[in-house]
Image (tube, rainbow, N blue to C red; front, top):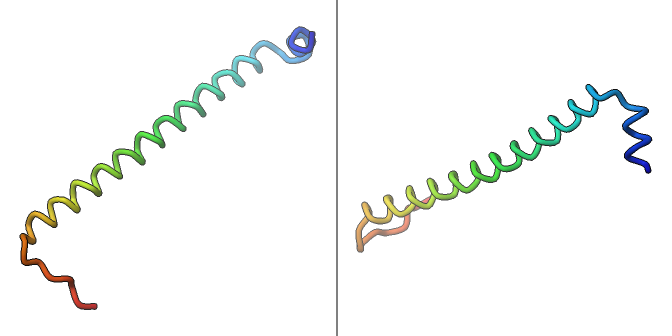
Length: 63
């Protein structure tokens, strides 16, 4: 009942904009999660490469 009343109160174009907004927000959330995962993978790859370059007799850097 509430949805039916809402449809009569709100113009269809406003509903379409609200639906598109919700879809776009969900897409942004997915892309942000993908970006975070890719950054994590990149950082892990860089750390692995640096450790492999240092070899077995690597010493900690002095501060």
